[in-house]
Length: 203
Image 1: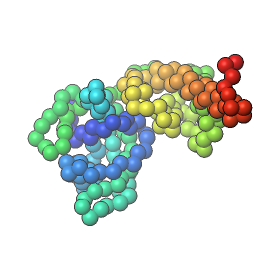
Image 2 (image 1 turned 180 degrees about the vertical axis):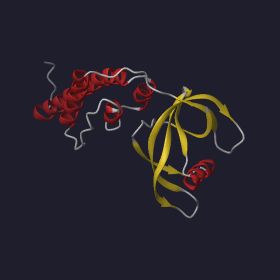
Image 3 (image 1 turned 90 degrees about the horizontal axis):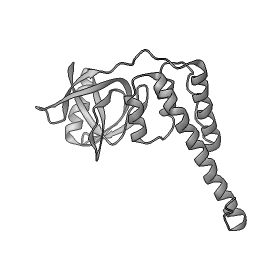
């Protein structure tokens, strides 16, 4: 267990995911400044109306894109290991906490389960007509790699972050992608019919 600086935001950073951040509050300028100087990581945790979640991700600073005269920063961070927040601590201008690393259980998806999840991802990309690269089909981390490429919203991403095996994540993600593709296809069909004759047919 160790103590790290925490950055609560209304978003989720998955392991391996890269994310741009704009740092403007004084306390977080201090936190990020220390991480840059020392080469350390901070903990990014989801914070919303439900409060601060107990599972977060260690975030390392990959690049400082821009420094402003008033100390603001544009940076890119990358998600590392997950952690369990044991206790919020005090003493700094920014939030800190005692954390324990959170490891997966030994439960890998089968090759068929992996392919089903990848197929669902491909269908969604095809329906959305999006130009998104395909993730590596390696068993470890496939769910995170896919979820980082799809806008699932913070609640779903947090759920995936908290699951304790890659197999659980793959089995949860596949149906979500299928549902998203079906919903997008229905919406597109309705728009096409409406634009064609000014009305929407119910069948």
